[in-house]
Length: 276
Image (cartoon, helix red, strand yellow):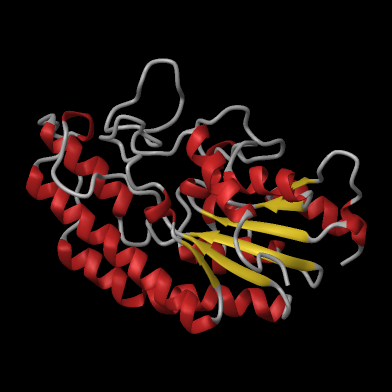
């Protein structure tokens, strides 16, 4: 593929960002992949070139990091993405997010897996039940368990896909924000104590599998669950919205704020051996 064709493809699948005054060829190429907790839906302004349904923000953590480190960025994160969309593509007719990785890529961040195991869908479905809506959908524990059974293999496939395209690239898994408090519940998240305990267990299992895959594959792991502890949706200084849309913002329920993205980007900037 020629350079012109490569840039044309980027305009289709993502956004190429270069820090002001820096030429892309002079900076490490950074590819950001993942779902909505990477994309930052509702955090304005939207990134230039973002497919509307991906709702990729120009203030997501990847953009924050790229600006702090003066990195060239290809952001292909997309709200609603699963590991299948990262490895094989198909979401909104987009190619695999892995296709953004080239031989020049030096850093890849990945936030993925929550949609595989219906984490956000079930959070929304359970809060819907609290409002006694007839349209609520909650996937069964058996469905969730079946998805968890294949998740580690899917995460390993992402790392393998990156390294087959760019053997020297540094892969860092960036896990999910702590949506729920360590214990109990609150009116803002609209979950019973039992439901909150159940969803905490799902979040914990997702974090554990991601951490284990990162260790087994020699990848990095930024524990955003730990970073955001005390900033859950029930806290006095929340980094995430609650169960309902809030006036003055387009951010969806249970999703991170601009402040949250800034905190993750800053933490990544301080991450040991971020780039080889």
